[in-house]
Length: 106
Image (cartoon, rainbow, N blue to C red):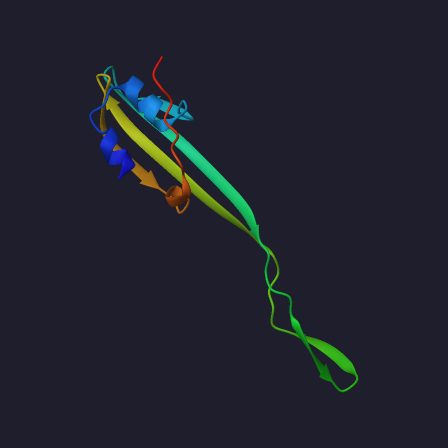
């Protein structure tokens, strides 16, 4: 929803709304470029310790699973034509957790 509100703004306003400079930019032709922002969040899911069951004289682990690294990534791309935002696309499971903090234009 927030990205939709930025459509049609100028490039300077887009940079302010995104809160930081883009991570990548690509010049497609004299009038068109792609601006790309990336977010990457990683954390460790702690897992679950196994339960132990006695089998004869031995204690055997049952179930559980080890800690796992979870990586959530988000990529947002804007197409800017003649200084105005034209369209955007986003991809990644981490986009729902990205917080855009707008910065005032100088």
